[in-house]
Length: 437
Image (spheres, rainbow, N blue to C red):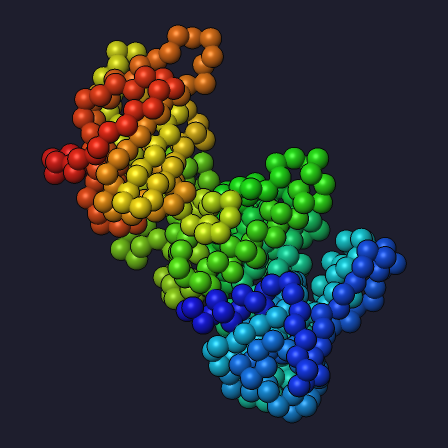
């Protein structure tokens, strides 16, 4: 799978390399002026294979023999809008970058949406040409970004769900939300449709569109992206584009992002959805196709995960159990720092105040920004309430237990200690007694 990272990622990236030996085609570079004038739709197909790793070959829409590097018996992945291409294919497959910039670069979004239908028709005709040359529809994978997700849906619908896979990266929301399935991407458009949502409150589509829909950080504000509109264009683009970077990260497979099927993001944050049964929790990204059969047996799945603000995006999850013996009920937030042999990891549980009631176990889900790596030899806890005007609380803890979710390592415990508000408490954890389970 490292080869996939080396293979598809650069194709999803922005630079263009020029190769002297072959006539290399460049991605249409349009400036803001074109967007205002409006450009008529023109679709270019740029082929990358193991033989031409950094040079996009312009393909004929009707004559595949004009590009001998294209082999119809290989699997083919289309990337539909739209970062600019450069590639280093390792695996024997065709990657076709679809450049419909002349139809998408339009300040008039209504026009760009209209062009998705035309781009879909254009590409459908090309897939028919491939099919006539012996290409198998089930080995075709369409990766659609934003408007390109719906273009992929239009192509898939034409072939009655026989295309192997569609991956939608933050499918466009405006003008598609609320429309019937035939006017947008839906699960009947391919044998397997996987979707990532990163900007459902602005440019992205809110509802489920595939067999499995992943919502990164709830699908709205991505960490590290500007939180307000005052940052200008970055505010609109950052959340939307994060979908591509998360997908590229999944190709590496070095830092898997585990997702949790759940009824809502809040339910997930509350720790109500960590148990995925015998098949385990799905790993987001390119490899999710391996769970296709399990996923298709269920109804549309919504799965949630949290990420860091930059690569590596994956986090490490622990269940946290605290039993207190305060007379009165206390509410507050917990920050935990774990120190392993070479790394530190921090988690703050602050999406809402946790309730601590005498002799009642409080369960929380902690997402750490890194894997602290076993053995964890130091734990620091901080308890805060956010109350500025009240005297500081003390939380009397009878038992703390930290259980890693993704590994079978033994839980860490600590018994009988006092947490003073806003004061960091540091200690060596001990392995839990089995009776604590």
